[in-house]
Image (cartoon, rainbow, N blue to C red; front, side):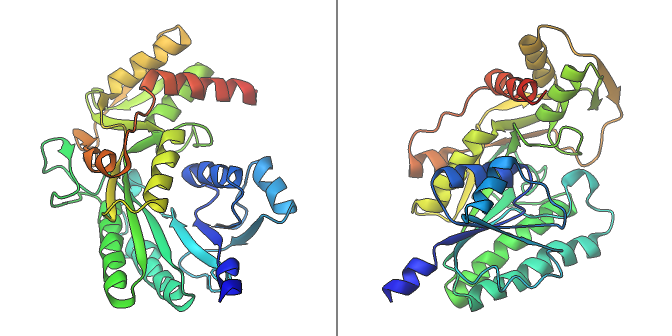
Length: 318
C-alpha cells in the first residue's frame, strides 16, 4: 500500500500552457511537484517548464480535450487542476450546442476517467465573472442563485453541478474556484480576454486602448501571483466548503484601469471608445469573506502595483 501512495503523487493540469496554467505550473515546480501537462497540439511553454521536463519532473500530453483519451495521463495522478475551456465570455453564445459538447460533455467523460483512475481530487476553475449573471447587487456571494447570461457561464455552472454529482455518486473530492479577473505575466496581450493585460501592453506599444461602452463597467481584478496563491490554498487546505469566490474583493472601473496605467507609464494612454456589448454585466465584484474566514488573511496587491509588475515583465522581455 505504501508503494501505491508514493506512485499516485502526480498533478495533472488541463490547459497547462494557458495564462493561469503557466503560472500555476511554475509555482508548483518551485514546490518540487511532479506534473503532467495537457493542452492543445503545438502549445508553447516557457523555458523553465521545458527544462523541468528535460529533468524528468514534467511530462506532456496534447490533443483535443473533447476527443482525447486521457486515461494514460491519469495513471499516477492524485490531483487534477481543470483550467481548460474552448470558449470565452466574449465569443460564447455563437454555437451553444458545440460549446456544450466541447466543454460540459467533454468534462463529464473526463470525470468518468478520473473515477476509473482513482483520482482523489479535481480542482475546477470556474468563473466569478460570468456565473452570477446580472441579477444581483453587484457584490456576488457563493450562496446566491446564479443566472449566467452567456453560454460560457452556463457551462461553468453546469460543470460545478456535475462535480457535486460525481462526489455524491463516486466520492470524488473536488474544489471549485470562482475566479474574478486575473491579469499578469504570460497572459496573451492580443487576445479577447484580460482588460488590464491588454490595455497595459497596448499602452506600452503606443497603440490605442479599445473600450467597449463608456468605461463605467466595474470588475474585480486580481494579480496572477495572488490568484495562484489563493487557488493553492483552496486546493490544499480543508476549509469546510468546496466552493469559493477568489478575487481582490474590490471593484474598479475600466476608466480606473486606464488611469492606473497612465500613472505607472507616466503618460495618458490613447483611448478609442466602441459600442457596448450585451455580454458585459455592468458591475461584478466578488465577496471573498468565505475565503478569508476559512483560510485566513488575504491581501492581494493593488491594481497600480500589479500593473507596475506587469510593465516590468514586458520590459524584461524586450
